[in-house]
Length: 333
Image 1 (tube, rainbow, N blue to C red):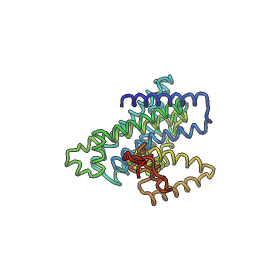
Image 2: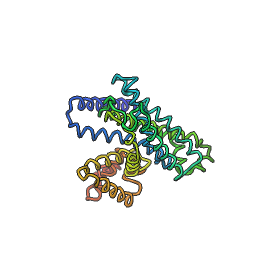
Image 3: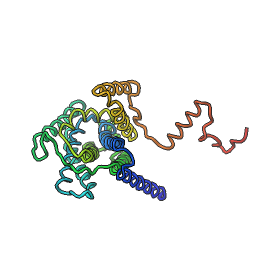
Image 4: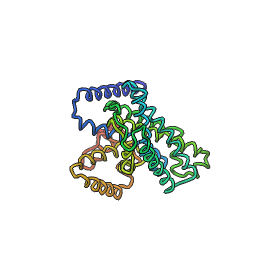
């Protein structure tokens, strides 16, 4: 098992090095690299949203405001404090920490308020953050913050995405993860079995906000510009679309939702405004015929892939390899 971890670590490092080389020597076109980076950044954001809206089961609309906090915080730090690109990961991390504090703040209303009322409160946080940023001159006001160092590249996006996936997986399998799932099922029953509901909500909201803040920082350093209007209703809508399209309570669903929606938006770009209408119609169809999303509640695994291949073989009349000779007497009749 230890050797497997070493092999996985080596593969991770090699992949990151290859991606950095691809970015540096522009082996792949800038357009395709940018799409890949958008998918990675959105996937980190969706992982964060899914922790609250999916695993915890609380409908929150505060992700755009939290993303703004992470974007502006990391951008200011990289512009005026740690200006050397070597400190770029630290800038993103600190932006995530500031967003985490905002997540703690949002979690407080969840102690008393539930359902639609909590959704309205979290949406109010997003609108407040947008309004505050529009009226703060030292962050550019309504014009936005410009000349942000363009430090984000495909290599950094990949490393942060892998870190986010591993952290979410570790969290779900931890004590707090089990408490989160218990709250999702029945909050009153969870309290009866001694689950600290307030502490669990604070931890989940904080961790979710950290990941969303990291995605905001990466996005700002990709575009070299950030604007309060970026984190308005459109970002709120897109975040929810990607979560519920991919499937709630699923890491695989988060990645799938971010990838499918980002690619769909780019493919339909020639249609202009109509792409949003067509995309919304397709989302409605998915919600009607697959309410749980494309991968809701499920995770991609090697065993799952093998089983899927075997099921396909059964349908076309071939004998599945995984069951061939399973009893040691495949050659006997």
